[in-house]
Image 1 (cartoon, rainbow, N blue to C red):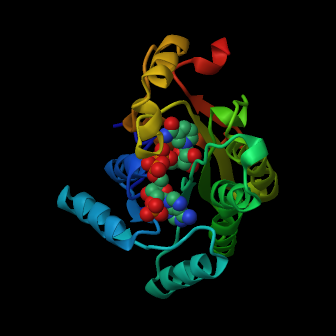
Image 2: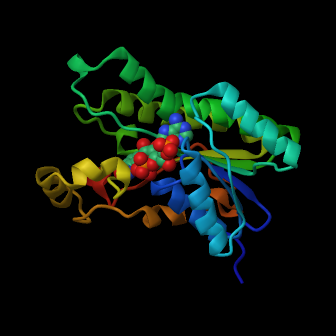
Length: 255
Ligand code: NDP
């Protein structure tokens, strides 16, 4: 059997994984053999998601914290240390969107979007990498970017700035931690059917625009991101570092 993508014996922390893409990543990595640690702010949702994975026979546990709260993140990693659990794979997936014309955008909203989508990857990534290095090196970090890591659109300025930043933060992490056997890459999803996009999916004009302008003529589904995440979590990607892989139905090719 081909074991290139086997994640047996690996522990993966996926932030923002109570629903949406994070929940698909957790299921996909668990199916590839990993023990998964789920996270979100809402502890009840985390517990429910953990229960679902366990019911399907997977090894899962939960840890509710806000990825923008450095003290809470540090406490979460300390708790894992105390349990003897080391994170081998980190997916910095937690993210939020806030649509607003820039001239009307409050600084607090700008800051919240930047903190959640960009600064959080530094806060969580630093704690994960510190421990990977202390254990003798080796590990995988996947940061979640977006089409907006490459192409700008109106009314999502802080999201675009954050996702552009994620691409380069991943490269900075890759440059700094490659010598420790840690690979850091970015996944850039296109428009995917999740709660984040409910308002857009239910907006007939936006929905029609997505279907008309994407070469795939449809929205993506969360499970369509799993293969890339498993690849970037596995030894199959040991010489892939600092890259961004867009999973967008070919959209960027025609933009
Ligand atoms: P969802 O809104 O469906 O889910 C987001 C998850 O993140 C939830 O579990 C939420 O739980 C959690 N979360 C949000 N803020 C925080 C926080 N501060 N700390 C911890 N957890 C948090 O989003 P998606 O699944 O659609 O998006 C996942 C990632 O993919 C994001 O980074 C997003 O930017 C990116 N992406 C999504 C695309 C799409 O089309 N859906 C396209 C491109 C990129 P809770 O609220 O309980 O904390």
